[in-house]
Figure 1: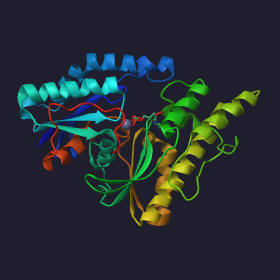
Figure 2: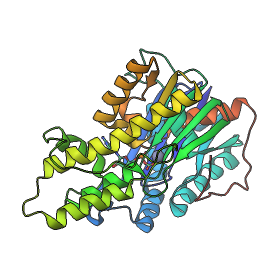
Figure 3: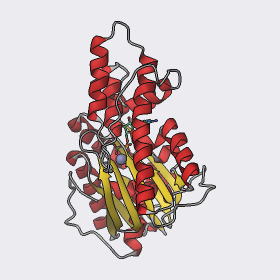
Figure 4: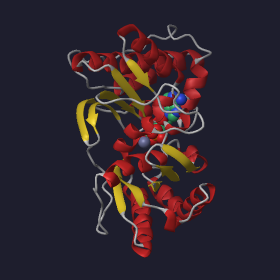
Length: 334
Ligand code: KG4
Ligand code: ZN
């Protein structure tokens, strides 16, 4: 069963063909990084215009690489939120037009649900370690979200905690801007942190005891204050100290969530899930507690349409179809 996934929730135009909800046949992501990087963040109007230009070429390429056509599809799965409304509108309108003209079923997927299902996908770097089994704790950590969920099955998601201010990826992007390192900040800080000393610059960690919520804005402000007072800026050490502070909190809260819920499996998703320190420190936490920790392959951590097709498959086999009146929603809780 082939599902075409479409994601235009933020600044990447993506289309993917996925077989039976788990096997990636093709996955095309057209990045808008070059357009937005000079502004230090995403400009929504530019993002939606670029989606309009790229949506058909990206979908056509996904079908070509999958050696398939629209008529071979079982359904089209589109992300309808949360995200930038103008960007979401492009993907939703396109998906509805395709389904209407070809008589195909349409399913709609919450972007966060898509991230959760990225852990079920396999590509060339297939999961040798298998896939997470329900129930598991999902740590969704991206540019727009930082949340912990208990996942008991498809459609059974209980939020355990969320950020009260900045998302972790947003903090990476803002600190990167402060340091003049460009957008997106995650990959560059991750790389530079490896050459710095995480103890050289003392930065705070908001553990918010007794709570599984997160807060990263104080950390960003601490970096800002440090920079104001510094004669010389030890960029590598700031990157290392900032990254260690973010990862320490993410790991500790995920550990608390798994122990509190008595759940022996953790799945990580979202752009910050590509972070090298987060991956090693979470794996270590898992070994210490006998918890299995799953990560998607790195290219599937950041936004992609394969995860939308994977979650869409679950909707489709559960007969949860969307109608032609589907509208995108900017703020859409899971
Ligand atoms: O999931 P994603 O592609 O988009 C959202 O749904 O937000 O995540 C993008 C975020 C950006 O904030 C980016 O800086 C961050 O993920 N990111 C990273 C890394 N790669 C991407 N953060 C830390 N380390 C990385 N290696
Ligand atoms: Zn995302």
